[in-house]
Image 1 (cartoon, rainbow, N blue to C red):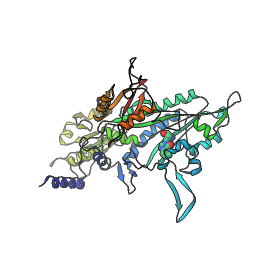
Image 2: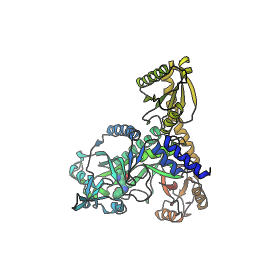
Image 3: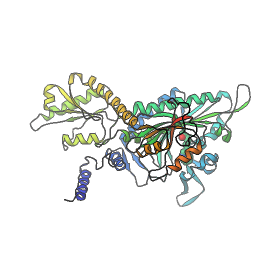
Image 4: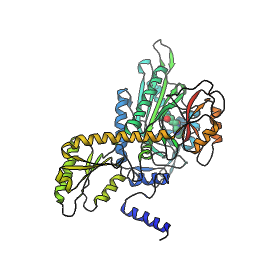
Length: 502
Ligand code: 87F
């Protein structure tokens, strides 16, 4: 059979059985990603480009992150609110500078039924202009401050560059926090507190290393004063990805929306504002970083199902006894607080079930066969490294706990090792270009001039997209005196990360 026909057949068989992936992560990353998110049942494609159905195992992860973050911001006395989805053109255009570059991405409702609306109504791409007129109304005196509000919602940005599930979709879920303070010092402090929560989402929950830092003038939110972010990196594509952002807006919006208050001395002053957000993009980064050729790999802390128990009945074995052992194992695990289930379907073989649950990324598999039953033990198999161990039933809960903790740690360490291996420190333009071609995350001394970053973008323009600054890390290596900018040759002011990005 010709190879192409063979491959086509292979693909067909996989489609029929739902087993395996056609593409390998290291060979065709883009196709691999699309296949993983669908075959693992995280995403279903929809008939509108850039819109995706988020299936239960996706929403379970989102809810875990949401539960953590929501509790943390409530400790900071942030209140949840909900503002409308729709915004009039008038209000949306109020802050012209901020909307200008984004205008092409705004989606509009122009009709109801067959009749044209008198005035088109926009769907929120973000809610500054929706919320701030009311901040202006609600804030009168210094006793009304700080005002801290957050909403969990969807937003729509009608993007035209290639849509990617979770990473770049036209509608996505996020939280957007909007806060107002009497002083800059309070705003500055909150920016970093929120950024730390974002770091924890990535590192503690999703097991993904991130860099905390500040965005360049070119890359910051144009309507704001300064932007901080957590930046992740995808080794396979050599692209940085902005994980979440925490902005200090300064007093720009206060000026525009007249958000004033009477301070303690009875003088009229303007508030200092922040805004901050993370979105379902977090989940896409997780899939890209941890997934492998068998499918999804989920960190135990966010996995909807942490342990799957599979009966392995041989021909003459006592199937009922094995099924019962599976059920009681699940019960023990659930009582101990784990998310566990058993797969007792009789029309699938154990091998098929192994592949199926591997595809779905379940961190730990427990197999129970006749021998295990006889020895009062179970076999546990890790999703992250495939290692197998037999553990006595008497210590089931203790050992499972240990292994899950270890998986969470190992995923982070492996991801960090891979990410760190992609970091390249360069000093000259030639080294920079070489590193970019090697898909590196580049740390370079920079003069911090906007024109120079524009020049870097222009000089690296190409099929794969231009390089840009990712962030200036808060954690700065020593910058020896006399160090020159990699791009301009002028005296360098700081170390900054550069690369292609999502
Ligand atoms: C697209 C269309 C219209 C991003 C847009 O980062 C407006 C915008 O303002 C827009 N895309 N932005 C910037 C959003 C800034 C800010 N908003 C609140 C955040 C955090 C949450």
